[in-house]
Image (cartoon, rainbow, N blue to C red; front, side):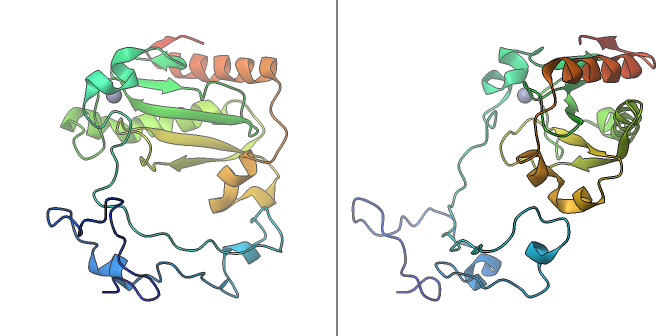
Length: 220
Ligand SMILES: [Zn+2]
């Protein structure tokens, strides 16, 4: 029986029928053109000024859903998360409740840091006092990045598909680079020249010092 148009139901490697305890794809997923190649929309993102690639490009064939989804890093709890195994890894600032980390190596964009709670929480289970302080923390980190100068905007992203420990990406867009505005900024980080290591470390020190000015400790 076809589960999706153009696709037959995947059969487990051992040839057994689909296990009845596995969650069924949602009605939304069942409508998707799984197994088909989607044509480019005429006014879609690949035609935006900010999209970093040019034709010829093809949209990937849409893959079948994976249910249940595989566990994210740290999904099983703090004992399996970096917050327990290596709590100060890449940390440039912390006040004991929140920490700001870099990504471990120089990015291509002038500033890219991660804000998250020190304790092991995701957004949905963030305790009330931490949740209430989140807005103020986002504002502090944005201000710290803007203090570098040469930053046109600080983009704030939370995806959370890789790690279960809540982390916001705060990414500085270089001032004047209008082509880098909006959704595609992280794609440009994959393409532009890397920031020199000493310049990057100095930026991390400045961001940490700016944060520490209002409390907490710089580790940069
Ligand atoms: Zn954690």
